[in-house]
Image (tube, rainbow, N blue to C red):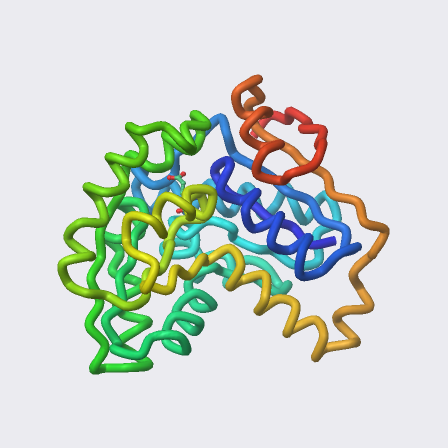
Length: 261
Ligand code: DGL
């Protein structure tokens, strides 16, 4: 079973991408909705939550952990790798790899939560591989609550996206990384506001493609994964609003189970 966690809706964009890349693989998702958002919390708190979420997923039988959250990926990857002996995937490196493959001008934009942008992790990873790259980042703290609220097509959301993207647009970036797993559900608006010539990279689809590549080239590991097409969805707080948004992200009926975190 592939174990996936996030603070909320964002992880579901990764589950959706994994369902598309690896149809039939059993998965278990945990959304820490009682403690969302992670993007405004301190690094240590996000590390503690990430360790607890991972323990829960392993207890349920996960054989691989996907940190489907850029915020957790930027601060807690090392702690998870130190504490658990199973493949751990973060979402930042796959998005960086894809962005560097795609960019022609090496002018790359990154948007994410305040915690992710303040960590400087995208810039660091991009520059490690291409020291000449120009990286322009913008924290977009209002986007996570808008997504959780299901405000996906409202004029107010369009206006806020436009305002956040303006500083990146004037830098004439040719590639934009969605450095938060909540943002792919806003991709149509983001693409429209940044312009159709800019390649928009989602960390959710990037990590799913990397996991597919890994499993198809490691048959011994792949054999450990059950493939009965089942996905369990667990959350630490369950509200009708979350249920509604979750269904629209997964695009199929799902049953969410409430557990205490
Ligand atoms: N989805 C998470 C991410 O990718 C962040 C959401 C939050 O702030 O909790 O960063």
